[in-house]
Image (cartoon, rainbow, N blue to C red; front, side):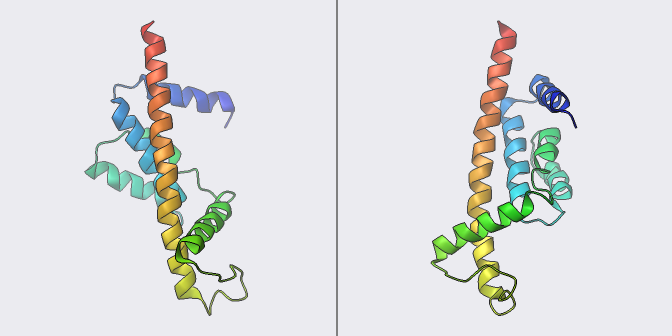
Length: 141
């Protein structure tokens, strides 16, 4: 996908009739689910959540694909590192010892995922809200 197409898509979102809050929540929920290790179930999960909560589905689906085969290892390692710091674990995160430490490693990744995903979601919320407000205010002038 070309950069212009991406920019055009986000401008269409900003022009939509959804409130700034709905767009910001969509970006936040999509980002949270994308960074959290959902292993391919992120986009379907976003669609299910859109039935329960009111947010912009298009931006949520778009941000739910941030995590992909190229970025997932980076996010998984970051989640593990954050979890290891919080839980004060010193387990080596490598393929050789994962079976012996699966319980501790899994908990470490889960705790780190909640923190990293939450942080990224907050960033996505405020960034998208700022950008939509900026665009809409520009259009009023």
